[in-house]
Each structure stands twice: as structure tokens, then as C-alpha cells.
Length: 350
Image (tube, rainbow, N blue to C red):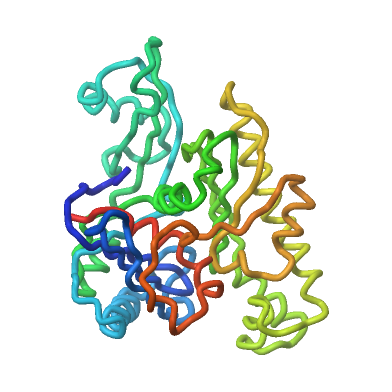
């Protein structure tokens, strides 16, 4: 589902995840019998250069991206990246059954009834979810993004000397990697919770289709600031504590409080889907990913509140990996950060 871009046939794809805390670069080789991860690189972003996904200092961020490509030795300038946040709407809708070409002619009119943006300044795409069905109505996954958001991402990458061949949506890129690595989660209603630096993305899948997304204003930064403010820890020490690299007796209390906040967001998203979809059952399980998924005890808190199995999603569980990719950093440490970047690199960029 390459939204706002086209599939191509290049042998190598470069996925670039521009996160608020860390920028992740992943290279996937499509030349063999199966996709192979050949390179992973990350770099930290200066504090407040990106706030809740919005780039506040384009010069600083583009410089960090250039440095990351140079350090990783990646020469390819064509990249696959994504946009997300409150300026992106993903919604499952119903419309009269028709061929895809005909639907493309009327989708903007249909979107006016569902998208709370000025339609003159929106990029749209869609996918028919039940093309082989015979009813009078068809289920369509509608995606809308403010054009300004897409254009600013293109401008940022151009300043870094890169060419975005595909601009996808965060939720779909994450789903792309998740589907490959966890095919057993493609049945029923499943939550995929990506706990980032400042924002937690909640994606609800129904029979493998991402039908509902929500962004929560809580991430690893909140956990770290709790420890800094109330326990007087330095930023670096607080970061080591929440990543399980250092012990602190009071961490459990903060994990419980913030975990409840995330759980409520997941519950509300699942409840909304249950009321909006006649076919939806209850939430059957939840998978976590992102830097926050490594916080000690957080998955236990989510499981206790949501009363469903919680599992750490792994973007390289079934993906072929070149032998030397994780020589410099343990795979268990970096893998939770890579779900979005891997999903982007699995695209065959033009």
C-alpha cells in the first residue's frame, strides 16, 4: 500500500524513519529469492529539533540525516519514508461498489464526508478491502494527509540531498513489517502499539487490515522526565533506567502510571472499532514495539489492565538478515526501534 508514491523495481530500498528522538536507516536488498536486511544505522536527534513529529529545526535535522548516511556508507539517494500524526487520517468507510478506476474518480467527494480537513489541501489515497465480494457496498480504507505535511517532508529530504521515491503512512509501514514477521496475528482484532520518544501510535488491525489509528501524547520522554523531576536523576541515568540498563527501585510506580495511560488509549480505540464495525470481535492480543517497548515491566502493566496477551513485536523475526548487520549493537537492543524503518525498506522503491 504505497501511498503518495509508486512501486518500482529497484534491487535495493532504503527506509528512513525520522523519529523525534532517533533517526533510523535500514537497507533491504530485494535481489535474491527473499528480502534481506543488509544495513542498519541510527543517530540521535538534538533535543526539541523534532517535537511530536513536527520538524522544528529543518537545518539541524537534515544535517543529522546527511551525517547518518555518510557514517553508514549509504550512497543511494532515493529513499522510502513516511508521515503520520494528527494531520493524517486513516478510516475504513463504505461506498457503492465499483471498479477501482471509477472509485478513483469519486473518492475525493466520498472523502469530504469523512475527513475534517480542507479538501483543497489534502493528498488522498485508498484501497478496496473486499474487491472480490459481490454486495452493493464495498469496504474501502481511506487515507488522507494534509498536503503541507507531505510537502514539508519532501523539502526536508531535498535539503538533506535525498529523493523520497515513496512517502507512506506510519501505520501502514509498521503494519508492512509486522505482517511479514507475525503472520499469526493477521486474524481477529489485534492491537499494535508503537511506543516512541514523544508519541505512542495505537494501530488496531481487523483480520490483518489496519482499520483504526490513534496517537497518544505519551512516550519514553515522559517516563524519563518523571524520573528526572521526582527522583533528581540526570537525563542520561534516567534513560539507562527506562531501557533496563540500570536499576532503580521506584521505576515500577512510574511504569504503572504511564502504562495505565497507554492502556486507556488502547481500550478506547478498540471500543470505538467495536461500535463502528459489526464484524469486529473483542481485542484478542496486543503487540508492542518502539523504544518504549523495552521499558522494564511495561508489558506486564498493559497485560494486567487490558487482560489480553502482550507480546514484544520483532521486525527481524522472520526477515533474512545479513551476517554482519548487528555486529556493532545487540539485535535485542535495537530491534524494537526498527519496525517502521524495516517496513519502509520492504517497499521496492522506484
